[in-house]
Image (cartoon, rainbow, N blue to C red; front, side):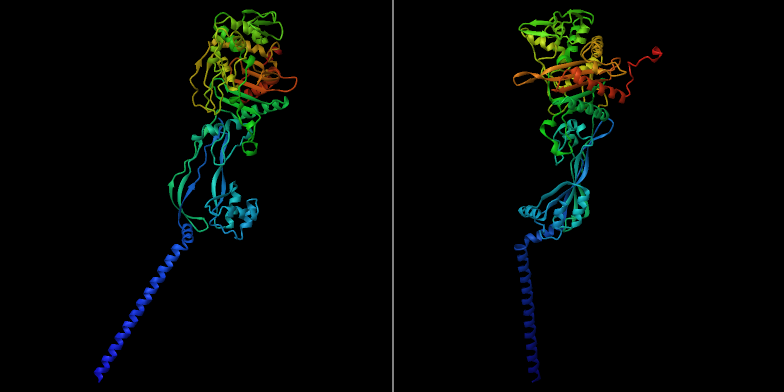
Amino acid sequence: MSDNNEAGDSTEATVGRGWRLWLVLILLLLVAMGITARMLSLYVEDQAFLQTQGDERTLRTVQVPAHRGIITDRNGEPLAVSAPVATIWADPKMMDLQHVNIAKLAILLKSNKQKLTAKLSANRAKRFLYLQRQGTPELAEKVRALRIPGVHVDREYKRYYPAAEVTTHLVGFTNLDGKGQEGLELAYEGWLKAEPGKQLVMKDRLGRTIKHVREVKSAQHGNNIELSIDLRLQYLAYRELKAAVKAHKADGGSLVMLDVKTGEVLAMVNQPSYNPNDPRQRVSSALRNRALTDTFEPGSTVKPMTVAAALMSGQYTPDTLVDTSPGYLRVKRKTIRDHRNYGEIDVSTIITKSSNVGVTKLTMSLPEGSVRNLYHNVGLGQATGIGFPGESSGYLPYLNKRQVVERATLSYGYGLSVTPLQLAQSYLALANDGVMSPVNLIRQKEAGKPVRVMPASVAQDVRVMMETVISSKGTGRRAAVPGYRVAGKTGTVHKVGRGGYIDDQYMSTFAGLAPVSNPRLVTVVMVDNPKGQEYYGGEVAAPVFSRAMGGALRLLNVPPDNWPDVNKQL
């Protein structure tokens, strides 16, 4: 009996264990099925949410900003620098448009909540949206303090121009992305531009960097450029030119100042100008660098070159007499006139009185290509190769034997076109005893290879002749600089319109050098269409030359060569 009971108990225990085993297996199967179902649910239904949350807690590769190269003057004064600013952007997919600080964000961005939320809603499918660029560091800190998910603040650089409109035609400006658009910013884009780096970082769900992991790519800052200009002379030239353009109600003007020995540009200014720090002032009429892009007929300012060609022929000396009677000359159908009948005058007086008849007679007595060839050799009618975008090459015609009238008018500056820089470059030969150095806007460690274009004796003779223009008998008396000997030449030409020359519009010019005993500077002043009774180069451009040249010589500590002898006076 007992054996039967034991057998029954054993059977029941076995059945009980089997039932519990199946129960555990079923429960495990249900748990596995539940986990599988949940995994499928998360993968299918919540994939986007989980992906977003994962992205917010993962490693990111972020850009490391680099600053653009600095542009300075020859003395290290900054002309273009990159200042750190803030870029505020949003990830609309991450944005909670009901966040309590949305209204505060809108106020910081100088907007309102309705406009901001509407903008974010319209771009909900995007992962990147600019809210504000080039904000101040203070604004960046205030935005960060709001701790709004999806709103990010990055650092970038904004281009700033300390000298503003004084150097803008040379330096130019960049766009919002830091790419050069005008001037040297455009010409040297490849040299100045920066290459941002990359860094692997860990960020939290609010987009804040919590750990820098490693550098992926180093940031490459742009290369610096040192210009040849002297900011002191640039300010001086700008002030004098602007005052003259305003006083004569002119359409514009240019001034170029060159170093005689090196050919470097020490000052180059234009009117009208604009402030590159204010995009609203960037109107097309003010953008171009007129000293390099605008051409005009140089008029009487090239007469010294014509006289130089005559001296180089060996037929003439400064004392050779030329009969300009009766004050006019008929060349085929054209009558060439002087202001009055100067009679028989020497070659030097041709320059002093700016005689059109005199230089025409000189030209007609020379081989037909003599004057034109010298014009070409001193750089007229061809680009200077200075590397500035949009530089004009001007125009210097080839003339055949039958173009007699054109040869005559070419001798006194009509029928060709030059830029103010080309005209200044041509005067380097007269200032430097017949030798020209290449002109440069970038400061050079060594002067470029000089080229001789005329004998030293010819350049010296013409320089002395040009000095008489500044005397009481000349047309450029107002170009005189106290304490210094000055040589130069005035020029006044009619402007050219669509239908030919305009009777009541003029280009007033003065080109000169100082001090005559040992020339240091060449300066050209051009004033476009001065209004009023004064329009001659000796009345409009010469006074600007005097003030700019005088100030520059004193700033550069150039010794006077025409100072009164105090001992003789006593």
